[in-house]
View 1 (tube, rainbow, N blue to C red):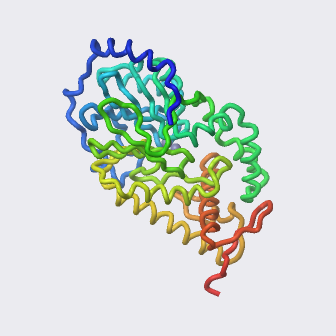
View 2: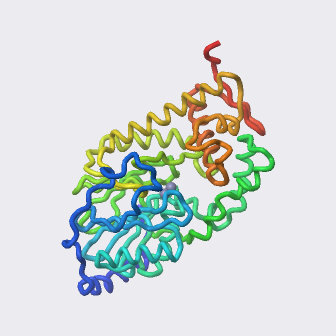
View 3: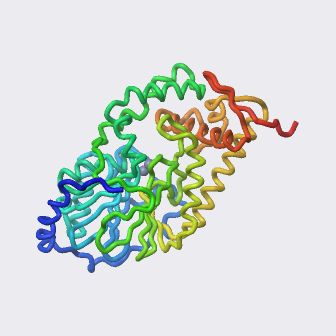
Length: 381
Ligand SMILES: [Zn+2]
Ligand SMILES: [Zn+2]
């Protein structure tokens, strides 16, 4: 489904003329090898901060910095065309991010004012925050999946109602009273990093965004966010995986008022959805490119199978609320050191496993504040 592009169609004419003058340096860079070979297994913080890299002829990776965030950068992919560049994802709405993106585009011989379209994989601030500013500078269209486009108003324009629902969900999960307010507001600091603009183009599953000379197909992969999109580029067998599949970290799949009824169930189905693709290289939005998609899909499934087993083991000694279960699960650091937004993400992640197990009939819930989870058939007794 397409929403009329509005001004972008008009702007395209002017840009085409300018682009002939600016031209590009696409033939002067060798194609960079994926980071995978040099960085897999290392700690993210020790990885070299990547530069602008040539992925294929006419396709570039531009790292855009994320302030105060352990992911450090989002990778914006730039597709060159005879009309001008098209971007996959954008970055946070900060001057630094805009400067890095503009500089990266100049390095490859083009300009932010020439951008024709911004395909946003999902609505999280590090991907979508800067899209409005790019549109303002260029007249480019912005695309999103309708399920994420739908959340913009609720999440960014009038979040009070959403905050109430977050608080109710936290009480149901068993958050201690003194943690309620800080956790309820844990995502608020990133609000200024988002320009809550509406998309010009909605891409459903299977849609082909107009990027001349490239054959991109949107693949709806809900889970990490309800409207998450991956994109398959068939002429080079590339999978642009957004946050759905990252080479080293597992994306957060929280149970959240905006996440739908069974986000982890959705996510696992979305992993299966990528299985049939013969992919030469995976282009994720964070970390580094890698080549073995199917192995990574299986690692991610195994991770969640282990998490399910962990939750079931915790419930063997009787009913628990989600908070308690999260506190007993293994995390990359001790539970007491997990604070703020990370803490809320951890409890949300525990809750999404509980919800998926409930739907599978393995566990049941006694609703209330807090809701208590227990095994359907106590095992080992
Ligand atoms: Zn994300
Ligand atoms: Zn992200």
